[in-house]
Length: 206
Image 1 (cartoon, rainbow, N blue to C red):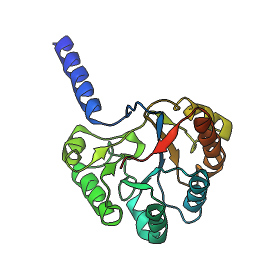
Image 2: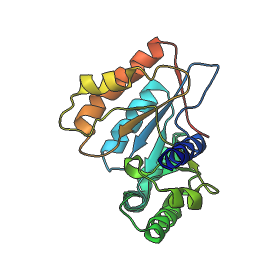
Image 3: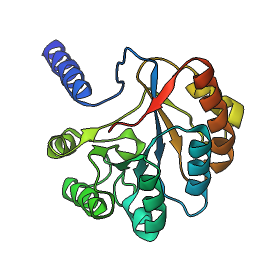
C-alpha cells in the first residue's frame, strides 16, 4: 500500500511537471530572461535602459496591483517589445491562499496585464489551481534563479547562480523589486555580457 501510494505521488509529480514549462529546447543558443514582481517606478526603468542598451528582449512577470499603479511603466515595457506575464494581483502564495481567492486574484490582475503566461509567486501552486489555470495560461517556471532578493547574496554570487544558464533554452529569473535592486542591477549586466560572449541570444516567450 505504501509502495503504491509512493508510485502515485511520483506519477503525479511527473505529469504535472511536464505540463509546466521549466526549460525550452532550441537548436539555437537561446536564453529566456525574466523579471518578477514589477513594475516599479524607478527600478523598472533602469532595467529597461539596460535591456535597450544591450538590444535584448525579456519577459516581465508583473504583479497586477503594481501594474495598476504604474500604467505608464507597463506601456514602456510593451513599447520596447518585451513580453508580459501574470504574477497574481497581490503576489499571493498559492499554498497558503484559498483556491477561489487565488484564482480571483489572478483574474483581477488580468485586467491590467492581458497576459498568456503565468508564473506563481514563490513557485508555489496547488494541483487544483493548476487545473483551473492550465487552459488559459502557459505556466512558466525557471531553470536558474539569481536569489538577488536575499540579504545573504552579493552581485557576484547572484551572477554565479545564473551563469550556468548559458545553455539551450534556459529560463533565468531576476527580480524587479527594491529588495533585489542592489544585487540585480550589478549582476544583470555581468550575466548579459557573459551570455553574449558564449554566443547566446535572448528571446521572449511570444
